[in-house]
Length: 129
Image (cartoon, rainbow, N blue to C red; front, side, top):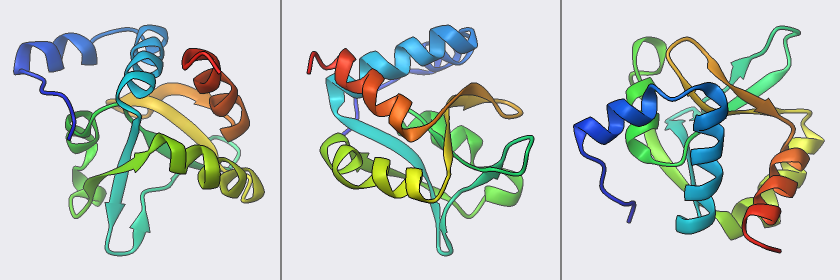
C-alpha cells in the first residue's frame, strides 16, 4: 500500500524541477520498494523518445501516474512493480528490448531519461547495496 499524499504535497512535489523529482523518485522507491507505471488492457504505456526509441514512464507513487492517465491513456490505471521484481526481471527485459525509462515525468513528457541499467545502478546505490 502506497504512502498517502495530500493535494498540497502532490502539487508541491509535481512542481519540483526534473532533477529534484528524480531525487524524490530515488528516495521513495528505495524506501517503499515500489515503482509505479501505467497499465491498460493492452499492456504497459510506452512513449517514443526523439529517435523513436521506446520509453516507459515510471513514478514513485500511483497518484503521479494517475495524473498522467489522460487523453489517449485515459483507460490506463497505475500499477505497482515491486522493487525486487523490477531488479530481477525488468532491467534485463527492458535492456533486451532497447527500452529507456522516463523517471517521474509531469506535464508533457518531462523527466530524466535513463537506461534500465543506469536506473538499476542508481537504485542499488540509493538502497546501499
